[in-house]
Each structure stands twice: as C-alpha cells, then as structure tokens.
Length: 159
Ligand SMILES: CC(C)(COP(=O)(O)OP(=O)(O)OC[C@H]1O[C@@H](n2cnc3c(N)ncnc32)[C@H](O)[C@@H]1OP(=O)(O)O)[C@@H](O)C(=O)NCCC(=O)NCCS
Image (cartoon, rainbow, N blue to C red; front, side, top):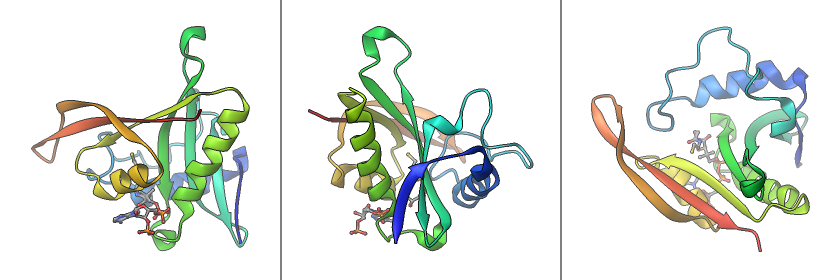
C-alpha cells in the first residue's frame, strides 16, 4: 500500500537520506547536501512537505511553497521532489504530485509551478505526464560539471 501524509519532524533523517541518495548534478543545481545538516530548518518546515509511505517506510517526498505575496498566494511552487532510488518507477512521484494538487486546490490554489534542469529527462517526462507545461526557459542558467544547463519553468493550472 502507498499512502501520502504530511511530514513530521520525526521524518527528518529519512528525508535527509533520500535527499543524499538522489542528489546529483543531473537533478540539482545546488551543491551536495552537507553531512549532518538537518532536512528541516528555518526555510523548510514539516508543514510544507508531503511524504509517501510504502509498507510503513517513507520512500519519497514533495515540498510545496505558496507564493509569498497576497497577489500570488494562489500559486504554489513544488520546490523539492525525490523518491528513494530503490522505490523509483513505481508511481510514487506521480502519486505525490496528484496528492499535492488535490490538497493545494482544496486550500484555494489555482496553479502549481516548478523549475527543472533542462537535462533532467526523467523529471521532465514525469511532469509532462502529470499535465505540467513549459512556461519559459532560462537558457544556460547554471554551469554544472563545466557544462551550461537550462532552468526550465513549468506549470499546471488546477481549474
Ligand atoms: C524524478 C523522480 C522524482 C521520479 O520518481 P518516480 O517515483 O520514479 O516516478 P514515477 O514512478 O511516478 O514515474 C511516473 C512517470 O514519470 C516518467 N519517469 C519517471 N522516471 C523516469 C525515468 N528514470 N526515465 C524516464 N521516464 C521516467 C515516466 O513517464 C513514468 O511513467 P511510467 O513509469 O509509467 O513510464 C525520481 O526519479 C527522483 O527522485 N529523481 C531524483 C530527484 C529529481 O530529479 N527530482 C526532481 C527535481 S526537479
């Protein structure tokens, strides 16, 4: 059984481990997560995170951030998504994104947005199959392993 629930502080070390297991320059422009650094902190609280639980084990997460201004509070950004490598290609990410859409829509959101590296083919295919479309591209926004990489903005309207 695959369930999705809100994260709690107890999930910290498991989410950290998933983050480390999935980090690469293929999927993230940020440096490798520092050893011993907690997952939750000033910029990310458990309330912003949904976790996927399979047979009692947390196997993936999605982080959601509402727009900071009243004028864009109807837009929620998916700013983190990862599934543990041993649980990938089993529909976990799709389920997390579906559940995220259901929950934010219930709270009045109209649009989900995200940013994905141009060369992250797996994630781009996932997002496209979940109804996200490209809204714009920042060309050569990052240099990763010496190679220029685009930052692709995608969105899905919830109406
Ligand atoms: C991207 C990621 C979250 C997908 O998680 P997942 O649980 O394996 O995805 P799902 O099983 O729900 O896949 C749904 C669809 O996405 C696409 N997809 C997912 N992984 C893929 C891959 N490795 N190659 C090609 N397509 C892929 C497929 O269309 C898939 O449907 P299918 O399995 O019926 O063909 C996972 O690979 C991951 O954690 N990657 C590292 C972190 C990352 O890239 N995060 C996104 C940053 S923007």
